[in-house]
Length: 189
Image 1 (cartoon, rainbow, N blue to C red):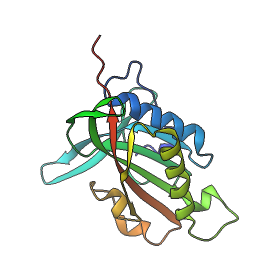
Image 2: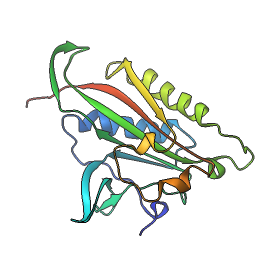
Image 3: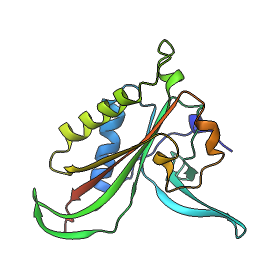
C-alpha cells in the first residue's frame, strides 16, 4: 500500500458542473486551514476486491492521474476529500444557482502530528475552523441549515469499508464528516 504522505492532490484541468465549486472548496481548505496537509477534491466511491471480499472505498486522482484509495492513514498529519451522497436535484433558483447535490466532506487528522505539544482531543477546534471556511467563503453555494456533522470512527467513514476500524478508536485521531447541500450552476456555452 502506498501511503498518502507520498501522494500529491491534483486539480481538474477544466472542471464542469458540481466539480467547479468542489474544486473551489478544495483550494480554499488547502489555503485556509494551516493544519490541513492534503486537500483532495471529489472522490469517487467504488468497489474493489474479489467477489468474496468486496469493499466500498473512496478514491481520488493523485498528481500522476492515478486513482488512490483514501483509507485512514496516520502517516500524514491530516487530509480531506469530498464525495456526492445524493443525485442532482433541479431547483428553481437559489442565489443564482440552478442545481444542488448533497456533499460529504471527510477529514482524517492525526492530532499528534498536527500539534505535538497538545495531548488532548482538539477535534472540536478543527471542526470550527472548517465551518468558518465553509460558511464565510461559500455563502452562495452552501445551505447552512443543511449542515450536519458526524464525528469519530466509524461515523466519518461510515459509507466505506475501511481496514481494521478498531485501531483508530485508541489513537489520538480525529475523523469527522460534514454533510451539506451544495448549490451550483450548469453553464451552457
